[in-house]
Image (cartoon, rainbow, N blue to C red; front, top):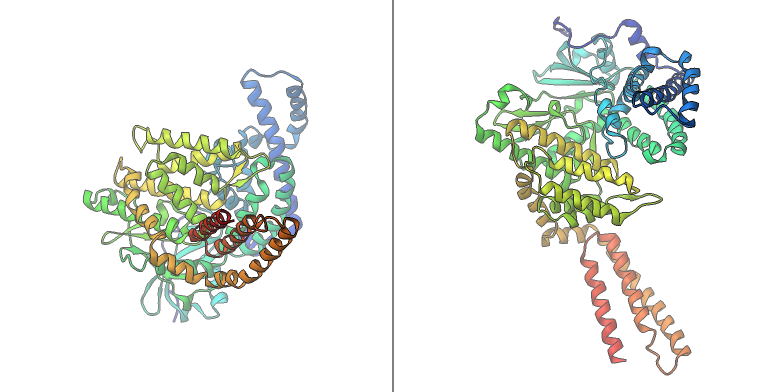
Length: 560
C-alpha cells in the first residue's frame, strides 16, 4: 500500500533544500557560540547607537555621559549592520532573535510574556516574532515518522496531506487518515531541533549568568532557565500526549469540553498522532453569528474551564490564544496544542485562588496580601509598600467605568508589574495564568461584547473556594498526608521528654517556682508539633492544635 499525498498548494513558506540540510545537521557548539555572541555584541552596540539617537531627537544631546556614548557609537557604527542599527532597540532585539533561528525565536516569544520584568515596549515588539516558520518537505517529515515509530508509513496511514497546517519553531503539523479510517493530525518535531535546543541551552545559560551580573533587575538567568524548562519539555511529544490525557481526565464530568484523543500506537518522542478536532475559531464570523444564548453559554463554559484549570487542578493550558481554542458542535469548547502547560503546587494554587476570589468579591486589601504571599523577595524588597500599591490598583479597577476598558487580567498584570519596583518577583506560572485570563477575556468580548468577567467568574470561583474547606476534601487531604501526621505523632514522646528535661533544669535553678518555665516549654512543644503537622498537611487545622496548646498553657499558668 502506498501513501496518497494530496497535491494541493502548500500553506506557508517552504524551506529550501539547503535550509533543510542545515536543520538536519545542526550547527556545532562553536559556530553557535560565534553567531550568538556576534549578535549579542551587535545588539549591545546597536542599543548604544539607538540611545544616542533618541537623546539627540529629544533635544538632550549634552553632558559627559552623552559625549562618551556618542564617541563610542561613532566607533561602533562601521561594525554594525546599518539597516538593523537604524532601528529602535526593541525592533533590533526582535530582528536579531529571528536571525539567530528557532531557539531564539521561541525564547523571544516566552520573553514577550514577562511584562512583569521587561519594559512594555520590548514585550510588545517581541509579540510580533514569527510564528509561522519555513516548512520542512513532507518527505523529510515522513522519514522522521518512520524512524521514530519503527514502521513504514504505509503500515499506519492511508493518507498524509502535503498541505502544512502549521509550522512553528519546534514542530510541524499535517492532517492524515489512519488505516482504520480515523481522521487524525500528525505533529512532528522538525529535524535537528532537539540537538540545537540542547546546544543552545548550554550557551544561553552561561550567557544568562553573565548578564545577571550587569542587569539583575531583569533576572536574565531566571528567565533563561524558565525558558528551557518549558521548551525542552515541549520538544518531547510524549509529554504533550500525557498532557492531553490529563486534561481529559480532569474534565471527564464536562462532556461539552473537548481535548484531542491521543493515538498512542502512532505516537512517540518525535511524533504525536491525535484525533482531528472539528470546530470554529472563536474569532470566526460564523462563531459571532451564533444565537445570543449560545454565545452566553460558551462564555460561561469558558470561565468554568479556565477557573477549574487554574484554581482547582493547578494544571492549565499555558499557550492559550484564539488559534488554540475551538467552538465545537453542540456548542462546546475544544482545546488543542497542549505542549506548553503550567503547573502550580498546592500552596501556590491556594494562594492564587484566595487572591482571585478576593479580587472578584471586591476585597482589595486581602487580594494585595495574597498576591504578596506568592512573590519571592529580592534583596531590597518592600512587601508593605507593594501591598499598599496593589490594593490601590484593585480599588481603581473596581471604580472603572466598564470592565472592557480595564479588564481583570489587565488588573492582575498591572499589579504584578509593580513587583520589580518593590523587589518582589513572581513565578512564571503566575504570568502564564495572566495569559490564560487575557485570552479568555479577549474571546469573551468577541462573543459577548461588554460582558462583566468578574460577575461571570464569581460563581465558579466561589464554588471552588467552598470546596477547599468541605469536610470531604479536608478528610482526603488528611488521608493523603497521613504519613507526615503519623511521623509527627511518633516524635511527640521525644518532644515531651525534651520538654521535661528543660522543666527539670528550670526547677533546679528556681526551686521556689518549679513551673516557671513550663509555659515556654509547652509553647515551644505545641508550636513544633503544629509546624511539623502543618508542613505535612498544608491545611489550617494544625492552627487549632496551637490554639489548644496556648489555652492549656494559660490554664497551667493560672493553676501555678
